[in-house]
Image 1 (spheres, one colour):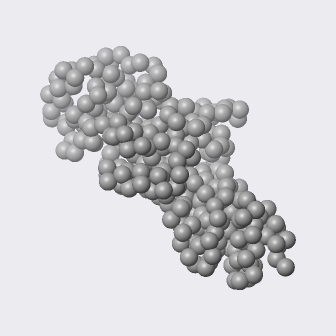
Image 2: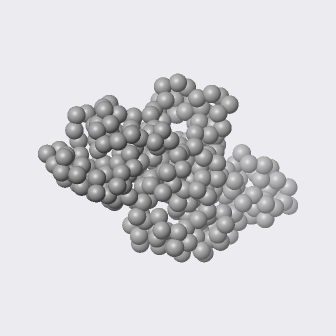
Image 3: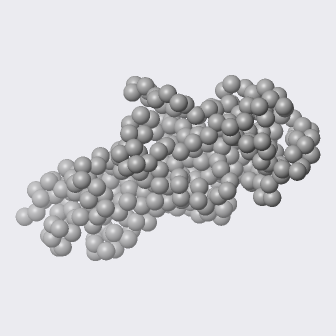
Length: 314
């Protein structure tokens, strides 16, 4: 969706609210002074002074109130990105705005599923999340992650969590799906689930912790007759910049750890995380006690750990 963003003084927002009085919406999004729909354009003014104009007539409507900063006005590209494009990074202003972010866990682990979380953080919640210790989950121990995840839930941060269990993972892998395609569809589904929860409100943008080039991501979507949503940005190590991605990384990791606990209980033995020699040995024990077919429900069977496990069986 085409849009223009203006940064205006607070006094101007109330003048705008009076101007759009006849077109105001009943339920403005969290953190907004008002929201209106007029002349083919949605207008949302936030307490921070940021005003978002979206729709076919966004430029015309925004011009009544000022001139936008080119770095803050985002239009949907009609040209295809270059195959060599490594990122489609968001404007720096998005990190301090109300936005969504997504991240995944479990992709490099032999046992357990892939989990993808997508979280929406309002501008007025950013400071609270940072104070709660929200940061990249890779820098935290699992007990810390669990504790911070509870705080995120207590703060009523809207989020979605999608889990690709091992049986389905192995089915997709045998169909020729790469892990990149799996992650693409999981992120896509997670964001759509979040949008359903938030409806009719919309994030100002969505930041994906980049695992593939934008062009490859879009190719995976097209192969499943899906299209990229609006205002989507790709950024490597996004959790270091976006608090929404950091929150999503914690939720995804928490979901993965909980699933691993369930799998260990079902297996009757402790299933280690990662893909180390301890994992090989655990897989060998699982094969000995439950048979080789059981790996389909516990592991990503195409990993080299499967072959290594058989070397440990006497």
